[in-house]
Length: 215
Image (cartoon, rainbow, N blue to C red; front, side, top):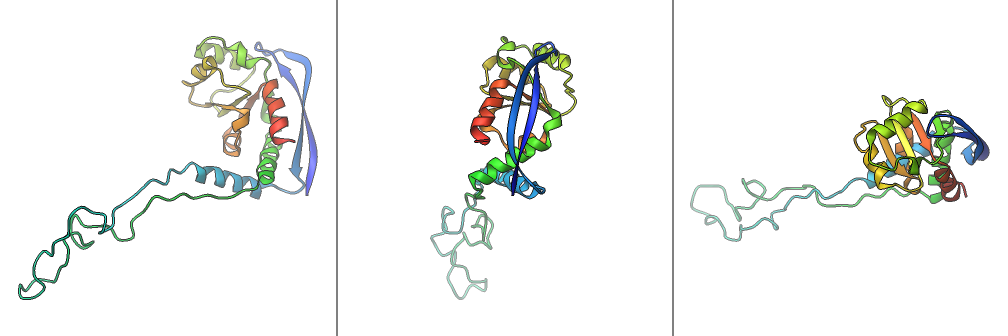
């Protein structure tokens, strides 16, 4: 059974000053623990990242081996029909891996519920920064570092930055920082949220999360 919860945030400007505007998130979370659902969604996400392209050749796919190496009887050696037998060096592989696609199905409602539950669990670690996308107008890591320092963000911990749209300048500014991950609100996933110790949102991203996951 789900319960509706409300989270309210006052946004910060790029200098770390608290603004008067208020942003509200309405989240549907499970009444009891939703950890099983979060785990299921993380498992689905990790399985979807697998390429599944590993492959080996069977005896029929290995080049050569059409001629019988020696006659069946009379040589004193063990009988052999092909030099591409799995018993031979350079032969095929028995029961080797083949390309496959693994899919773990999760309903859309379950996925939305797991994201909302996790966002609610991380509510104390979320900060909303006004105009973050446009504040970094040039590809300078130092600019983003100063912004984080002003807003009290600890860059020694995992930080997730959620924006409505990734700008080239913001991507290049964050790329060199090992603990910072940039993600757009439309591509939000439970694994990124779970790993993050601090989450930075923008007002536009909050609106997109409302439309996409809280509808």
